[in-house]
Length: 349
Image (cartoon, rainbow, N blue to C red; front, side, top):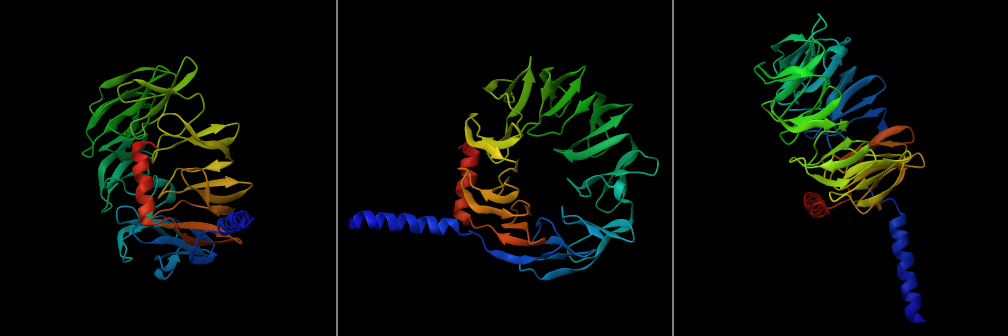
């Protein structure tokens, strides 16, 4: 009897511990807007003024901007007087406030370049000094990835390098981005994959195709969905819509609910969430019952679903919304736990 009571007390005690919110506030909710941390800083807003804070919550760059974006490659896009420019981490203006919002693509530099829409309505690229290094002669343009950027001319897509040289002719109806050396391309209603030289390495035989993620890509042929590797070998069947693999898992959708599969196609977290994001730093943001929380790779809640909204963990910090205001919580997983989960992601467990 004593042993039974002891076991019961231990069970109740453990349940009580895990029923409590397992997180620590780094910055208490107080902001009307909060972005992801990058390079130790995050953009926040009170009212209509935006600035940057550090991980202690201290104001690092005072809120004097009308809008901003996260730091990328040492620069952040900020808005003043309805014009956008770029600053460094000291707040020094490196690219003057001269751009309209709609002209700047995703408002970030990737591989030192950013698509830019000129007054003519055509796209080119600027570098981190604001210099137009690739002339605005394209109908559309995407960010660089693996040294190449997708561009559109005469309603067809191809790829250029950083000198502006057309490496892959504009002959495709649609294209994706390069990932793991391959990019998906569509021609005559069929999808396949090309390499950096433009050589077709996976024939254009598919009804649909997604970007490669960690060596895997979902494709569809004759109405059947499955994942392939870079050699075009079928790995496993997957009839449900799925995201590219990221940190070992892909998100799948079934009847408006989301779950996760691993790299052998095994369903490891049953679809049950109304929203789900990829795993970052060992945790994934999910939504259940209109509230957001964070699960581990076993599908267990590490942080209960009790937030009105939430981002994902970056640099061990995550923006969350509670009581109508945004703050930041710390990642409760230890560095050792995160390393273990990262290793499991590589192995596909």
